[in-house]
Image (tube, rainbow, N blue to C red; front, side):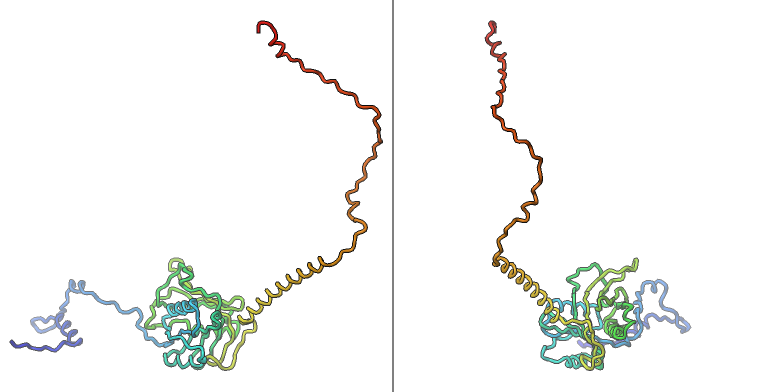
Length: 343
């Protein structure tokens, strides 16, 4: 028995063979359309992709943190990664390492933007948003963090869809806010035609300025009436400083109204301490008053308050006893009826 080995067909040969089957020749040798109308109906054609453009804006954001963060910060970091399809993750950085090491990590990961969460004292959370490697960079204190799992909002959006960015009008009025606006646009906006993104726009990121803080919210855009339903996460950014370089360098802007969390806790402790001291002083004064000898009161001031003048009545002395009243005896009619004969 002899076996004949045939090499596998290549992809191009398979396509040519399929195309060759569809071609028919007439008797004269001219080609005729091999596919009839019924055969065209039976064929399934794959539609072309929706976006035929190229991925030109190669923005990549590295989202990671230092060691010592709590569970809420970890969930917030994971939520930002799911909302931003152009983000990358990395292992936690050691506390002893300086912040300039983050630039090298971003270079290794091929990222030109970075969101770095720095935890201090296991209760204070700081966020760095930087343009790697030349800067600028901004440092924020993160407050009022609420994650997706914690909120349980009714809003929802497609994973990987591109967001709209909505900014408060105050961002265009001051120089440091306009710089932050450009930094937020380059960091949070998903590039067009990104491989991990979807060609849909169904949610919006809002950055609102209130009480000299930046409030971040994520809303779903409802198709029916274009109303907004919150999705999450939500947090508040309190600006500390803006640096010229990446994670350092000369200071471009410093927030004058910023109060560090250590100072805030110190002020609370001082306020409670002053309240306790005031209570102790009041108690001591009360004790001193009790111990003091009180001078004897010669005349009561309130003695004559209720003294009301009354009319004087003439004194009458009775010399004879009063007359006794005669008591009438009740007639006992029932007893008499009983004594009558015949009863």
